[in-house]
Length: 231
Image 1 (tube, one colour):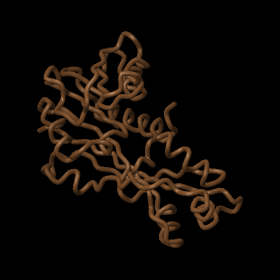
Image 2: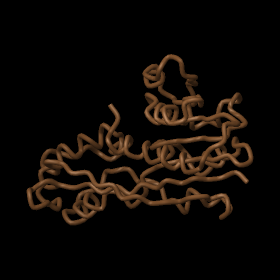
Image 3: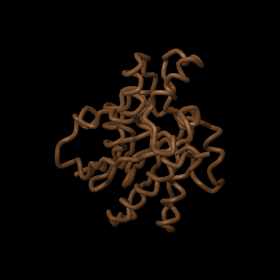
């Protein structure tokens, strides 16, 4: 099941695409498409348009509707040779999993036709301040992922190729840190090489994590959406 945050930003990306008033020429591709959440939303909005779905998980691709074009591919490699002349490439919550994202995003951009757009969303390095502060306070190693720095990610692009770059804050609320961490495991944001926390450490994190008036806990995400335009 998709997390709420991925659904929320898939809807945001579709909103941005509508504002671009996109042309029908060229291929439309969704990278790291998973079960097709974003691709389905795009096709629902642009009914005459087919979106090709590319993902490294066969299981995920099989969850896409049978009529859609699907390609099984490891996105750490350059895109499949048949992918060229793209007008629109989207990727929601995927680029931060890949090795060398600065190089990969440039490769994706190079597949666009002039006037085409690449739209990506990803968590930034400023996610999870509550978690980082709590770990610092109680001297426990922070075991969350280190997400991306947008300046670093976009360093190989000219200013006029960066059509839109916008940051969004997204707040999640949980009954306690145990449910919070379970949710992070589901979205894959806790997959680091750090040792798993002991029960004792988790209890300490629960005790010192900032609480709301009703004793619940928050988790703050910072998400970047970038739209890059091929001139």
